[in-house]
Image (cartoon, rainbow, N blue to C red; front, side, top):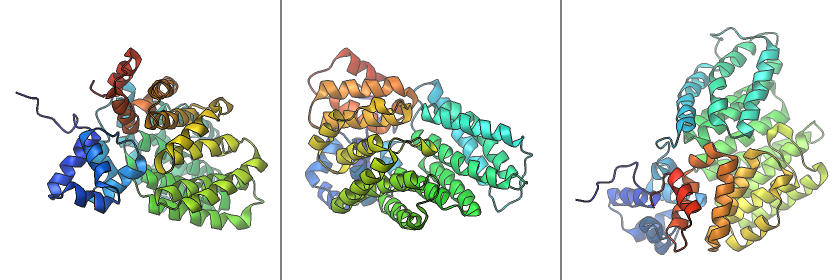
Amino acid sequence: MPKRLTPVDLTIGERIRARRQLRGWTVRLAADRAGISHTTLSRIERGTRSADNRFILADIAAGLECSVTDLTGQPGAPADQSAAVAQANVHAIRGALIEADFGEPPTHAPRPLPVLERETELVQALRSRLDYAGAGQYLPRLIRELHAAAASPDRDTALRLAVIVGDVALSVARYTGYPAEAWLGAEWSRQAAEALDDPVLLGFSAWARTHAATGCGAYERGHALATRAVDALQDNLSAPNAAEMLGLLLLTSAHTSYAIKRPGDAAEYFAEAARVAARTGETTTFDQYFGPTNVAFWQLSSEVDGGDPGKAVQIANGTDPAVLPVPMRQVMFYLDAGRAFARVRRDREATRALLTAERIGPQHVRSSPIAAETARGLLGRAQRGSELRGLAERLGVAG
């Protein structure tokens, strides 16, 4: 008797088919609702096309009236102990974010401000290394104590730290499969920025909310947040870090323009971001590393999901990720490069890129349903090396 599939066993394509059948819709009707061809949807359901395009997944989820995570199965069963720890931490982070409302009195006594500053730097560093389990263990207490410190004479410094820590919480939650909790982190960052009324930090919190929104597949909302923040920052470009923040917001405006099928707008935003990057050079502001190399990284990601895979390959081949020796940035580059190579059937380069990403950031890659889908597509083709089979196994993909 064949094994009965459980939700954990299902591929993204199988979850899409199950959702469609639950609604009683034909492939053609569901595809029309998603704004894609019925051939594309059919191939995704049957597993002959990888379900690793984030824009298409968001469109399918909207068409099926479900969340993206309903289709990706996140948060899935943890791939290893570090992933299990990271997922457990998110539950504690959620509770801290709900409790630490800046409109409510504190319930915890904070440690001295220098301790909170050092711990904020630590969680930023752990996030940059994609150590979500490591960062997550500090966040619940740090969130509560920054909330308490914001009601003390250290208010302004505590709020500045909170803007950053909210974004770290967002990253930990989003990349371990909890997009709603990621939005809580972004909203906490916004609360702190609004309390300070600092235009650059308000821009940063809008950038964080854009990332949280797109992590939920809400690209229209993300686009609105990013473009409004670009406009709001225009009158404050002489402030410290304002140029870098503007550049980051232009990049997210461009990326979300691709997602909502406005490539002309995307090209304009990318061109403006490139002009800003030419003035700033490579930067480390807010641990986001805006600059010419990061512009190329975002162009690669946007072309993979919403543009031309061939152009994405050209960008990948023409970009040196070593310019930004930061795991957080490099892993995103190699995952996107792997998808680009896979789309043009350059399987050896695709496999090598995925393996490089896993070596740099194993927690991130092994928790990524997009990486798993790319590996699944490669595994389904004729050339199956032992390295690819091993990678697929670590990503939870059956051979």
